[in-house]
Length: 287
Image (cartoon, rainbow, N blue to C red; front, side, top):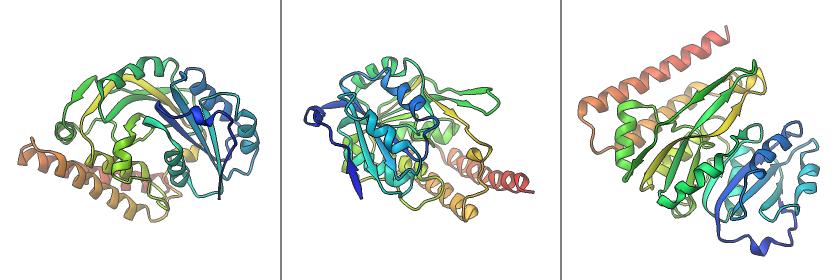
């Protein structure tokens, strides 16, 4: 069951440039940190859509208190269905020309929107930004990406086949043109325990036109526990990993038009090697 918290100004929420969708679940400890990182820099022509996925803590009450305090903040309360179902509810509610995602335990980087929103004037279908990973120790690692424009998705696929360094996997470092999502009837695959973000991205790319990458850092990916970066609790991990790897290979080889046979073979070999290494790391971690 989905319940949208009543909003007297909802009628004015159409025609937004960007919708930022945040799924929440039992995140009372860092909810305000996440939402404040968005609301503190959110212009009036953009919206924040928060979807609570049946939280058992104080998160729903905190969201009810926030609802109505900002014209460009909307809250959706629903029963627990998992992060994919919550993101899908956010997509159903979104009104922006573009959509972005942020997890409730992460934060937008300060001044990100001020620096990133002008790029939308270029009219690309997909924007990919850098990110910052923050470890429990407090140390951080910046994952940058160079400024580049790819007028055709096949050009982007060529570059990825050659480098495999385009920050393709996450959904929280991207702006997606919503009309492409709707034209593809694209939603996150529910019931998938790992890699649903990659599958979404591969499917989006299949219907995408132009792609732009930007060196602007979008968000801080914060490790909140030792388990948050572990594959130990993923059911059928080997099968899931194999499926994701095949989906990646199929996506980029079908889209790439300018790579040689040698480059394509090298890409497949590297993907297979990555898969083997991921299995080894998991085995070593759980010995």
